[in-house]
Image 1 (cartoon, rainbow, N blue to C red):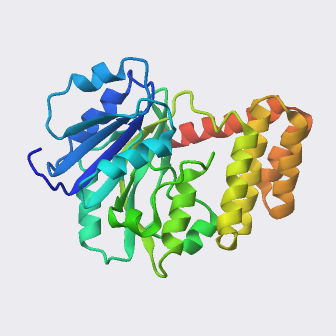
Image 2 (cartoon, helix red, strand yellow):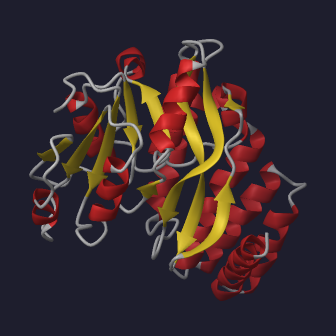
Length: 309
């Protein structure tokens, strides 16, 4: 590599995404900051991902093959172990960075105290190429903010001080759901006054073609329960209700109306003032199709609003 100690290590975990991983790699290598390394961790792919990565001739690119599929967090941990940068960025293999992403993140860290353990940027959500939502980063995210929800979102668009993983340990490879949220909670709970800073510019595109909330509600529920067991004192009422509603939607996607309605009833019991959960519960009481129809209508309205923003 041109620089033995890069400022930023971009970790890209991937599994059988040969058709899109090149887009992620291209966006990482196209950053306006050259002082970086890009670590692609192939988590047991069998679709020719190795040929895609092997086609690059760039000494900033590192390719690790795990040999077996251990899950995204296991792949990220292998990337963290290999990383030599002062900062570690995560990029999902179907997403892409705007060229100034790393520059703005480094600028934010340089202007911040050591209590800023991580930085994330605003990002666009795309389906079939169309923007259907824009997630605006908060100026700062505290442990109290995480108790109300997960404003940071998934690991894509996040960067952390490499020292953070020495301080609080690696990502949880056994957690079946909400691995990102659990790490954010653990990171900010470990140090009073710790925070994650947000960059207002939209510097990432998240492509979620075909992505669903999940296919196994029991595993999702297990993940939520484990987070509550470990960090329940930090998780507030609204976030607990959101957990229940997410499980309900997964049940609806698998055609199981009764548990879907039951978990939405539970969400309403936790957060009785929520009009959204009341509408979802009414729809689930009719049928799974009615609930999914409401969710699809909500998505279409979001697409329309973003196109005319």
